[in-house]
Image (cartoon, rainbow, N blue to C red):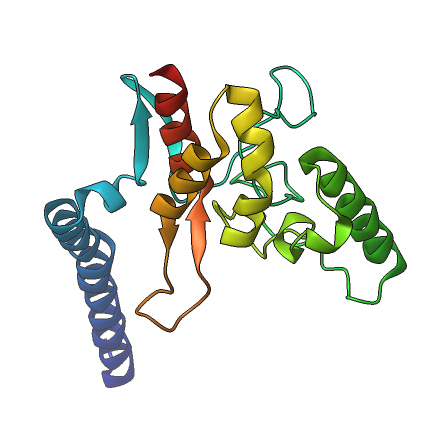
Length: 203
């Protein structure tokens, strides 16, 4: 074997060895270490932030879901409603509509959604906040604004036989501030709010 062939063989062997080492380190060891740290330090978040209600899994606090009348596409008036979703809250089909703010289809959809939200909640269209009629970038945002939660209070209270004050206090208890005090907006987690509402209505 000449010098050139031996050099090529050595380079090839070194490359294969590096590939094997990096595959083991980055494909096996690193994921196992990160998984172990996550399970030890943040077990709830590492497992999807699942929420249970009456011993059963009710969903994830990180993923929005519909609160429609069972077997229909109509929103159930007993529950606080989430933001609209382009993917029907399917976590495997996330993403925005990609329609621009001046797109005629989007403008029409928003106007119709505003009228529907106003009628459904018994408020004037001017009181309907933008997150009640527009989807989030992910299409599965689990939060709504305090303003959207507040316009739903009267409807939810009547449908569940509760006082408006009881439900309003429930919303206040579930309001969360901006992340780190300055990132994002104030919000309310719809799943957590509705589960607390279910417990209150059962008492």
